[in-house]
Length: 334
Image 1: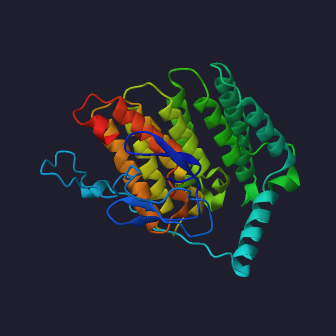
Image 2 (image 1 turned 180 degrees about the vertical axis):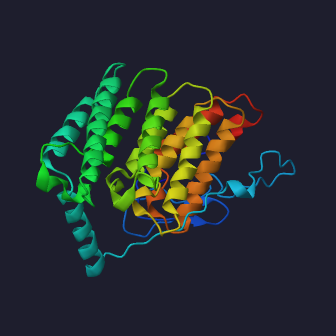
């Protein structure tokens, strides 16, 4: 059991405390923790502990009605980044380039949106979105006027001309999405999704993103995770399916044709949000769908993705899903 959580015997009695020892799930029919020998597993991994969920996606019983089709399996390429001097230099150079594109007006604007986005109510999110769209309209007008004057790359030359112009970027949009994820309105998730769609349109559309003028609004995993969280908190019908679809879209964006996009690689928070959305949806087979996502986390973690270590929140959501399920045998699965 990863992280710091309590181990239980098969009778439900608390046995001892288990802390993560830097181990890895080992695929031996079930997901298991392997102690590397340097930290505190106080209870041996024997039969006194409840066995963790299996990592297979096909039921071994004769009744295969819950079998997951092969085409639903996530196909992610495991990534291991070695912090060589070359990599560090490239990362530092990229960071410096990104910093030069953000002027003081944009920084102040993003800080303002960030502060507003911390509110949990039904009125702040519309204000944050209005501020964002107003700044976006002004910047688009600036680009149009600059193109008419014959400037070939207005976004890269912008700060030399006017440091008071707000250039909405990924952080700006993500702040607005986060505001909607914390909004108590029923249509909050739809608004968060619409902002993500707008980011993708500006970044991906050849008509708009000429000469990389909209590269600064490219979505990252925080943008995606915020929208997934919005759907997870939504009570609308089909919200769990929307969250699952977004997770697959993240992998499509991550495994793009031009190479792996590290900034969009799903992490444990991505999976936990989707699992939570599916588990609380009360849809048919929602518990088994949530369990499948856990199995995928275990599989990808075993293949080398260290960002996908399931934690107590992951297991808790699935246990609750089975506990609330009316299907036969759900309590045993929990």
